[in-house]
Image (cartoon, rainbow, N blue to C red):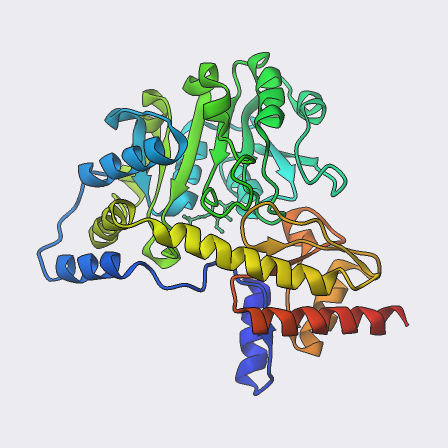
Length: 371
Ligand SMILES: Cc1ncc(COP(=O)(O)O)c(C=O)c1O
């Protein structure tokens, strides 16, 4: 957010800046969802149930069954203002002072701050580029204590784009079985943006016996390019869903009724756009990678999903490099923001020409820094 703000400031001052900071799709929301929202907005819109309108809970359940072959009942789903609020509500409903939450790094920056806001302690577990930024069963086992309340899994991951194979998730599940008091967050907000069909499996699919401990989170933000509409949901055991709904009730009642109606239509309408957009992201990923790979100052793992490149820097400190890149005309996010100093995050939620220009600036600037 800070880098995007600085990029906007430079632009306002008349500088040309390529912005690779953005964490949101550059596509339009589905036209049928927008049309449904327009029609809904002229009708009286009153409070909805705190856990979402029944049509949306049903549509989300059916989409999950269609895409991931997982079945949940109506009482096992809660809708909130984006995946973010569902996760926050879940932490708030369950965490006590001093509880620990295991967060593999690099991580989405909100997890540790949410945990701290709830008075609990984030336990950061670094996952190296060599391991493909994946949490290993051994690292998980070493991090779990009797105070562990949640283990955060996110695939495809922001910012590394890493996913887990069936076997990798099965390995984590084996460890989790030995620690029955830990809940498991499976943040699947990028589920539709993954480049190898076999690669992604929700832990709920791989370990059905852990179902009563898993909160599976998803929403319309990334898949349908509807970040600003603020609709996300979580599937989980009834008691946890009741807790999430109780928190939701007392902080903002519910997410916008108009947005909920648009989300129903996005979920029920034609789904071809998901595959089309994935292919567009894939072309962008490959175009960006091709340029970054030319630099001897960068080591870039090919992301399996999401829309970020996360190269490791062989020269300079990430914050200083991001500053130098901004001066050179390209805004990026330093890896320190994600608990992985020494890296940069580049979003490819932008057109290929812009992305290529940004990557060229990065390569040339790093050559200059190392000279
Ligand atoms: C890993 C991850 N989870 C959740 C979210 C939040 O999604 P939403 O916009 O639905 O709140 C993001 C947004 O960047 C994200 O990267």
